[in-house]
Length: 81
Image (spheres, rainbow, N blue to C red):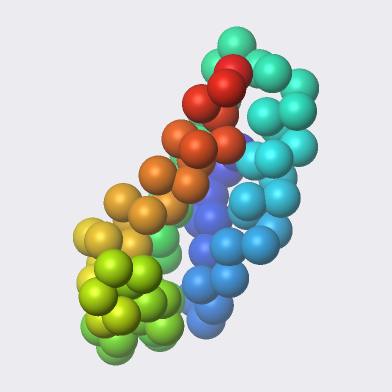
């Protein structure tokens, strides 16, 4: 997969996760993700206020927490592989 994964205006992960789910169904030996994953020119990232809420404390995630969340989701999709 070749980035940017998210464009300059949205942070919607649906298409990205769907593509990863399809890849996981094939049980690949390797998956190469080429970034950028989070586009630093994305208006929501530039604002510093991400519309993603942390389930633990109900606070908005910062850039690094959101990036980590993406990799946790990827790991979950491929952990049985």
